Image (cartoon, rainbow, N blue to C red; front, side, top):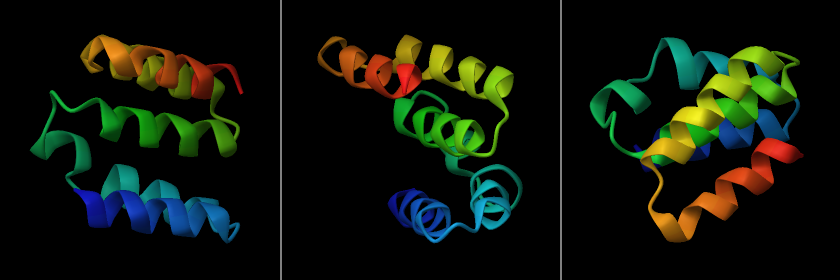
Length: 82
């Protein structure tokens, strides 16, 4: 999962949002391989938000917050508000 998250982030940082979305959503089992891990939902939410898909991003942030450990919930909230 870490490789997919890094690849998606790299594409996003380089301005290749469609590639980042593709890595996170279409071709990679980031969330399906570990549905209880908040990091996949958070990463997908960030990329969707950067791509202007705020409604879909908000749904991902809600999922991330649900699965995040208590100490990470404020981290998720910070990204959701950006």
